[in-house]
Length: 297
Length: 234
Image 1 (spheres, chains in turn yellow, orange):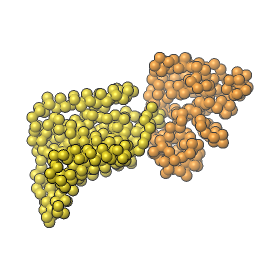
Image 2 (tube, rainbow over the protein chains, first blue to last red; image 1 turned 90 degrees about the vertical axis):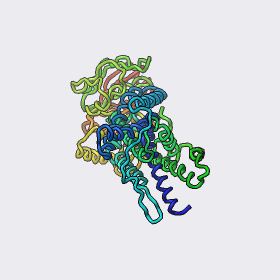
Image 3 (cartoon, each protein chain N blue to C red; image 1 turned 180 degrees about the horizontal axis):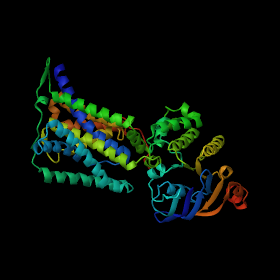
Image 4 (cartoon, chains in turn yellow, purple; image 1 turned 30 degrees about the horizontal axis):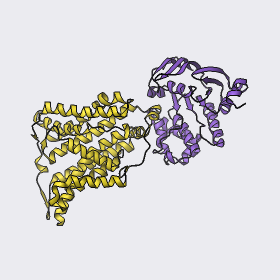
């Protein structure tokens, strides 16, 4: 393998990895606070992609504007899902909220099938993302720079919110002890709603960029990336934002590099990815960044 | 004045508080003593809004606060420091303090109060950048009290602040309670350490299985035969 092709594979890995990471962050944040696996998260991802499609075809918005509108409205839907399907079950056994999450996932998928129809759609992609640039021997798609860069910026915003704002302090407190946070005057439900909003916005951004890379929309398009991102979050150490990013990137690199180095085994790339991830978990069951925490009583 | 009338609390089928009434006059230290399960913590949890399943009325400065949620209770000037300290181990001492001030938005006032609690607890100033979890048990208790004070409360409710501390530290805790009371805070104190609690309290109530069985000034109860027999190891 030449250096040039390696750089291309590297950028592809980074692109795929950051898309997984953005989704994984949403899983990990919600789990960190509510100990809930938000199965509807992959549908949130799907909605992000569809809303851009709608914004452009129905409302004739410019691409960038459609993207912003999509992210904001999907954040709103994420908050609504929490309000309607999870908040009433806050004091119920954890399994009830989990079942509710599976229900929301099916519901959103079927709503998407009704409204968007099951036929795959082509999505508009700005030309400038498709024009390969030549750096010496290296052929670079602007898309493979755009996706990691935008993802990185979004993650920096997230880090700022979580570690340098009052709302972020509330999130970090709630993730350890909801009741005491409440006693200290933290408006718990508002902070949880914000968490869903942020996680959903990131998933929407990921869905939008996913559609740039694989430009075909389907109502079930969220299932596989969502599933893989969930695994990435677990491998990274669920509950840890850094872990979600590391897990996502790791998964992206394993997937792309397996194919790059062993092209004959391309069909087995998911198998390789998961074998490696299982190995990580066997060595460190709490995930790469995970710390052992006692289960809440 | 915090006035509780005929308060009942239910946990599922269990009737934990069976109609208790008590008064907490402004500026005083009022203590609730009694055995495990007598309903002391339930009383505080009901006042602070954590327990929704309750009957009776809680009136604070002529305002009915019975149905307010914990955030509104904190805003109304009543704060509770829970049993077991429950500081946030993964947050720094300063972050723990800011968390106590979460319901406030007066930045200057928050900074002023931070300096004030640092003066009250010099150890907190020394350790302000350390994670809460790295503090010793006594320091964690100080942090829990300091954190509660950061909400600028008028009434501070402390649930078992001396629990699990070495005797020397227990003495410190009760000293601090006297100091914050002297600085104008009304204190509601729930304690297993009946002797120490009665010594600092202006007024005291004895709870048994969800009912108030005895009340009086701290001094009266310290000398009461029944209290000595049951709680002071007489």
